[in-house]
Length: 188
Length: 203
Image (tube, rainbow over all chains, first blue to last red; front, side):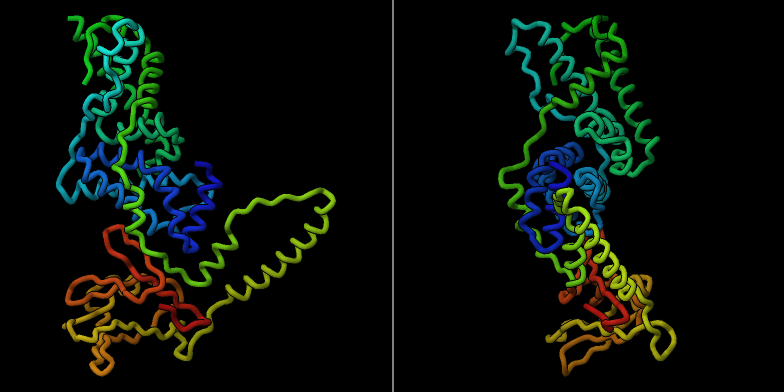
């Protein structure tokens, strides 16, 4: 969503137009819900936590700095909601998404070997990303899926900009290593 | 999870740049789980209308971004008007930001009154906890006024914004009469009391 449009919506909400907030919910419900699902691995709990994240964002909207992108701020709040839930439930698990949400169906494309190989590789790469520790996984997702700047990643994850660069770099390195190990393993 | 041995040795031979590109592309293009139907409606149903002071609403209205268009010929009178408005606004701000007058006690504090309705007299002990008393239970105990059916605390606070909540028989309770509130991030709602020199207090 365009930043100026976001600023208008936020201003409207702060002046009492509650319904204006729904545009922000619709715009970002997908990534927030996906974030929760990655952390808790349960669709019902993920929906509850995503709702809590938006409710918290609504309650704290006065503290949002206009002139910045809304999504990184929302993501930071959502991460805190998920961490609070993990602490309350004594959990710190890594959730692996089954089949990368059905990204690839090899048997559907028997005649396109190269395309199939690329898709299989892509699915494997994504699985490796999902299998990283959350701090590296989230950094890669924020950088490459949601196009966050390093400063925005740092803000969302509560770390320094150099720390954000390190996490992205280290995350990529770990995925490369796992990718190579798996394929080498298949050769043997 | 999809696994296929056909990729073979070619992957091991990929250089880092190609592999990074593959990873970036995979992350960007992977499908995202879809929230349950009616999710946004469910979120919206749980939101309460905001409570803002008239001053806060005015400030937000003034700071709301707007599109402005002008033609060069109109620029000079428009700038002159802007200068006048800025001067008036500056003078107005000077008045708003003027130091709060010291009260007769000389402490720079102002009288405030916290009230919690309890017509059934169901609570045994009520106190106010907030930033001004370090959120200490028992630091600001309220007295019960059975005739009025309320718990009352009269005290003095320095000008500024003060977050607080009631502690009713040990349970934190948000002030139901608060006009301005803030989520504390831990599942509670703090009321905000604005104390300033022109209005004794605003709850």
